[in-house]
Amino acid sequence: MAFLELDQVKTHFPVKKGFLLQKQVDVVKAVNGISLNIEKSEILGLVGESGCGKSTLSRTIMQLINTTSGKITLEGKELTNLSPGQVRRHRLDFQMIFQDPYASLNPRMTIYSTLKEAICQRHPKLAGNKADLNEAISKLMERVGLDRRFMRKYPHEFSGGQRQRIAIARALAPEPKLIIADEPVSALDVSIQSQILNLLLELRKELNLTMIFISHDLSVVRYLADNIAVMYKGEIVEYSKTENVFNAPKHAYTKKLLDAIPHL
Image 1: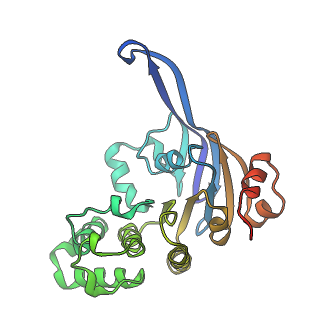
Image 2: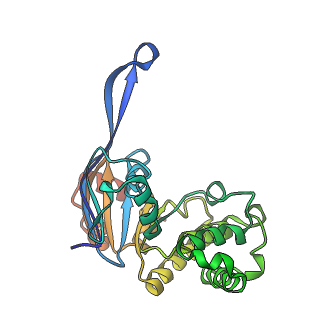
Image 3: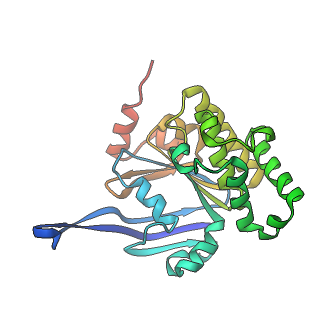
């Protein structure tokens, strides 16, 4: 059994028109029958143009959006059958890193408060032990390349790359087994992108993390991913080892994506 299994997952949204939007006339098939198996400690690159359904699929796996049909199974536990309360408890095992860290971080909370809240979800007893909590936050910050002296600062006091490191630290705080990274470097300068990508690779090796890395940038995905799934109009049109996708693409859409990569 694979670590994460998607079996014919569909996420459809009704579109209504007419007077006061009372008449249903169509359905947007954002995710339309996707099946994938992801192994433990694998990095899967999910690529495709904007609007193809990548982010909807990631939020469906996170159980932030309900599936229309199909099954999502994490380590043998079917997530699509869980109640909202059960989902909240199991979400400690799968966390998400968003594209814009500034939008995803609470501007009124210091980094200390943000990480404390995330750590105590997994270890509630730490909330009453200040010394151990401080040590846990310090180690977490250092793990993502931030100095512990900055823990009392607010998100606006950091650069974009530093904020993304904070977002990664928050995702790591509950000690998840699966990380979904939705375009985590697309808003960063190229030099900062490489630092964040190297950090993710180090964390995968150190913590044995499984990761879904979503991007429209094939060059970034090639550097990071073990396997690539190409998404087009809500479906996976190609799935293979990373170098196979680049050296011998099979689907016409994949070939168009590769042709669009700028070359010097």
